[in-house]
Amino acid sequence: MYEKTDSFENHKTGSHDVTEDYKIIVYPFDKYEITIKLSPNNEFIEILEVKVNKDFLSYKQKMISKGFHDVDEFYSE
Amino acid sequence: MFYAEEKSAALRFGDVLRGYFSTTPVIKEPMLEKTIRAYNIDVDFPPFSVIMDPCCEIGKKMISLTPLIPVRGSFFANPYLAEDLTRVNRKMLPQQAIPPHAWEQLTAEQKQERLAVGLEYAFLSLFIYEKHDLLPKYTVHRKEGPTETNCYMVDFRNIHRLCCDKIISPEDAPLESKVLELSIETRKELRDKVASYYGRVPAEDQVRED
Image (cartoon, rainbow over all chains, first blue to last red; front, side, top):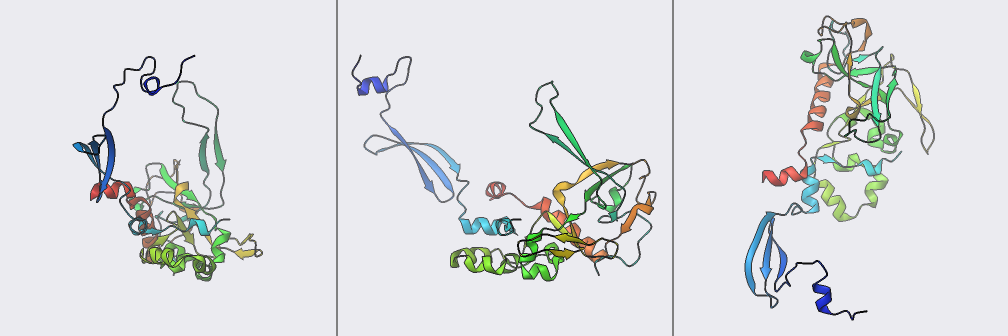
């Protein structure tokens, strides 16, 4: 029996992972999602990805953009 | 005027016909392997069907139909619709599309969000056929009690293809099967609503269009 340590947690048998010395966060900006790599001290390293946030529409905007009245919930048989 | 006073000597979009089968294939899951699994083809013989082809597309021994079906009993819970069920066919205001008791239960924010939609269609896939002496009355069973009507409706999701040797063109077709023809105004309403049903842009695609 072995005592569990961080080392065993991070380096499982068969794992070739390199211990991460950075973290990745997704930062919402306007209608985009920007994926950023930060150091453990929250220092900026690089931008990994910029993509459109498909949920950037507010509920109100979604209702308007539907172009019809979604009313089925009020007409159950 | 919902129906044409005189039927033209041709099959037209929206016509009510009799004498045609309705079929629906039913499978449990897509058959992606070579083995054919159990499936059903439900065959109905509805009293009436409606032509869903544009007038110029009717022919070549083929036609698109959808059965005329009973209206939803829940429509009668909304006095605005109960007064004239064909209002389902046209654009309406948000507070008209929802039964009053349900509208009153919405929060101020929910009401505001719905009001922002403005004049639009509700029940996008449905189109009501107004009462007519040639359409038999039937009873709609509701919690509040039975209601008698001879209004019917079509659901665009029920459209199916039927092949018939006698349907050569709109004019060269079994016109004896034609029961009712829509007026020009009503046919436009049907055309507009079908177009809206297929023409709406999903929210995901609207994002990409920006």
